[in-house]
Image (cartoon, rainbow, N blue to C red; front, side):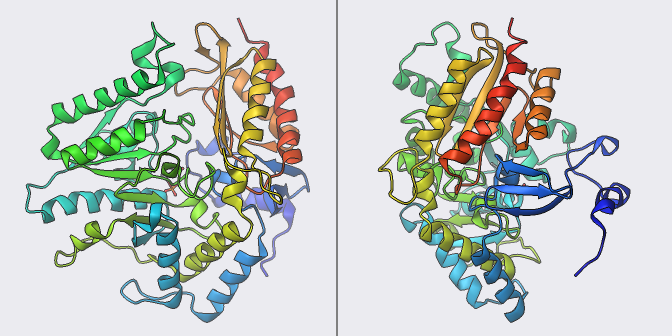
Amino acid sequence: MFDLPDSEILSLSKEHVFYTWSAQAKVNPIAVKRAQGVYFWDVNDKRYLDFNSMTMCVNIGHGDERVIRAMQEQAAELPYAAPGMTTKIRALASQAVADVTPGGKLSKILFTLGGADANENAIKLARGYTTHRGLRQRFKILTRYRSYHGATMGAMAATGDPRRHAWEPGTMPGVVHFLDPYRYRSTFHRTNPDISEEEFTQDYLNHLEEIIRYEGPESVAAILMESVTGTNGIIIPPEGYMQGVRALCDKYGILMIADEVMSGFGRTGKWFAVDHWNVVPDIITMAKGLTSAYAPLGAVAMKPEIAAAFDEQVFESGLTYTSHPISLAAAVANIRVMREDRLVERAAALGPVLKRAAALGPVLKRMLSDLGEAHPSVGDVRSIGLFGILELVKDRKTKEPMAPWNGSSPEMVSLRKFCLDHGLFLYTHWHTVLIIPPLIIDEAQLQEGLSVLDKALEITDKAVL
Ligand SMILES: Cc1ncc(COP(=O)(O)O)c(C=O)c1O
């Protein structure tokens, strides 16, 4: 349809494309040509195994005809309608999303374009909701330090990790950060790392409650958390933590917002990660796996009482492309594919091994733990469903990371290069390696990728002190 020789794609892009998260002179992108299943190919026909689902988003895998067809049909029928109108696909998509929320209880859906604006809108809803109750407006949002919530100014402010630093102090005011229940590097337990899970959990809940009290509960609109932390370390909350946060929210009249942009849509072996702990947040934000990135889309699912707060009060916000029909067609088809192919069960960390689709969560867990045993540079491994991480260290005793906080190191650069050279696409973040493949991956393909990583880890092993 559009002609450009493969050999010119990279050079023309270098001339005109401005890249995000990059120093422009240093960008050297892979020129991708096609993708199918768990693989993609560059313009030189080199095949890569996709161990990051591109940007942790292609949950159902590449090239699924069922989703592509749904988008094509929607484009032919009605490619766009104004935000104040409704369409068949808008009705169906909001029902499909509501149905997968915990117990179907978050039954009102606001569609956005991605994850950042889903979080921005969730914050606006939480702030507006408190005004409706006739109270002085609550405006503070509590989020954790090891978190990423998006790159728009409000979502950047909510983000705890250093990606916000470049934009401060110009980001949204009113965010207060707190510490994550991160067992491997627990701030409170350096001298007693063997503390019981129950006490560990309670210490972090006490810390959160103390911050709520210091800030003044009557000023706190919401606690916004990634249910399982993504790029900041696949931090899986200990038993009782999510329930404890829910209880604190109830005690102080604070809304609980679960950011499931990365952890949602089967990634952890449940539709949403909060389902592991049977917690129902007031609001869930989502994007990525919602359409498996076949089209851009985010959503805010909320309890009906939050929506009802705007029955008379106008919700002062909007997006030209909210509920874009082509994206919604992708979402509905994507959810159908996930159901038909039982992809949530496939990724499951627990539960019965299915006949057609083996539950791969335990398989990945075992494979990661084998890697950890074989390589002295692996300090810790964690995974839930198909959401895994290796923390690389120079010294298992001191836990000195293989790259500094917010930095890189020659070893981490070489490890990533080795993987790419050997056809394995994955994400490294500081001193960690993330394993976030499409949910359709099979055991042999997992093994294929981890065998490359096994060799790559010989590089970091050499740096062990
Ligand atoms: C947990 C989380 N929240 C929000 C976002 C922002 O989503 P988007 O890039 O679609 O704006 C991301 C993106 O990686 C994310 O991982």
